Length: 436
Image (tube, rainbow, N blue to C red):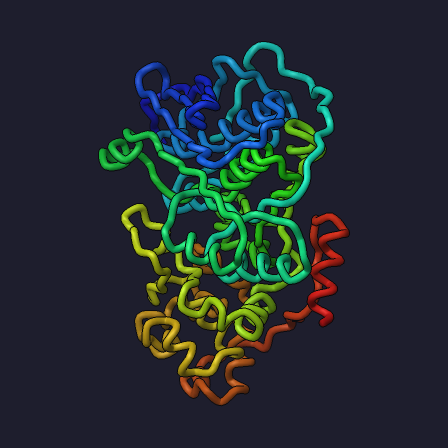
């Protein structure tokens, strides 16, 4: 591809604790400037460590820059002020390459050789980080099945935590209220000229938003004096969608265990060894998470939750979450819920739509089942667990329309307690709940 810009610059960032506002500045060469804003509109701990916070802001600064770098994919990436170490450079080159995998695939751009973080003076060497006296946890709340299950399990076991969300959404406030925990929102304002550039033909596409959420969560935890930053990402994120130009393409890269481990190492090496980031439901399949939501927590949230990304459109001001019933994520979730909810209840949840009987979703289900095409780009179940869900749903005799779906029987243990990277104390909490 040809780009009119040679260099993407990380220009600098600044934080005003009075207004609780973080500004991030970027440039394409010296001609196009971007300014992204984060507002941490909640009460700060009076003893937060400003040096540790700045370390976290630097990571967020680099992670968030991906939204602006992708507009033209300049040949070089440089820092005007903040130098980084060789290990930081390696972390972010990997994040940009694999986090933009779907973007490269959909825009038919060869990813190889496109991510070039250039040295800016002498590379920094790792530095000694002080230990912090932190307590409690901050749990990311999206309003989907995974975060609801994680929050309710932690609550049932007496874990001290607060919830938070990146973005201000009225429907999340209602869900947080049902969970009965203190909730905070961090407001993110993209640079206004980004939409203008996209409208004028700049490159656009999927970014690893979960990596940005991870960094914001760490920043929020430092400001609140919390030790644990907890997310809810199961095993299904590990399955790639396809391979492109020799690069594995995974829509959910920044939700994978591989990213989680890389991010944990980054936090402990460059932010603070006292802060732990992890997924609480990592060992569980999406099907196991769906079973728990449907059989243990459904009545509390049935009219208020959704895993459909349509809820997070900028134009959505609704106070209630809903399901579009058209996207791969809705199709996947419908399948995952089908063995555990009565037919009428499941169809009611999706606005009166039986997604199994929708002719517009035939191709989507064939892709979800690995029968044809490429696995849909979205946070959907693994092929083997969607097959397992369909077989379990058939056994209920509630969905005769599934009898025509033919595929090889899966070898998939959906109740297995899989690999994870959480502290053993939290793994014990999860196991205790599962064994009840």
